[in-house]
Length: 70
Image (cartoon, rainbow, N blue to C red; front, side):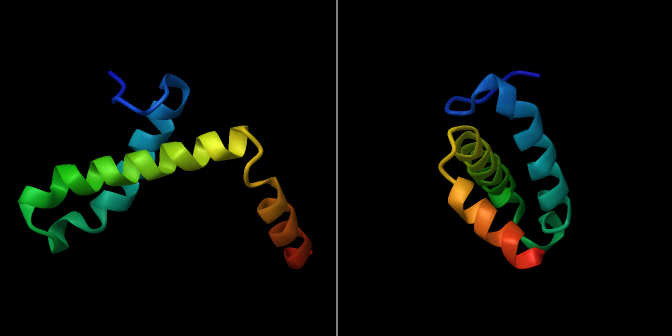
């Protein structure tokens, strides 16, 4: 599976799978011409979130939410 520009290789498969799951539920509600755009946007967002998690940018938010769940 080839990666997309802007999506690092370690995140590509997870981003692809997330996009497939999310888009499978909405593709029948949006015009076909938008399918690729929506899938690419979901993949980019998911990959960016994974990068932020790896870099520790979301540590405080994760910690706060886990404390509120407990």
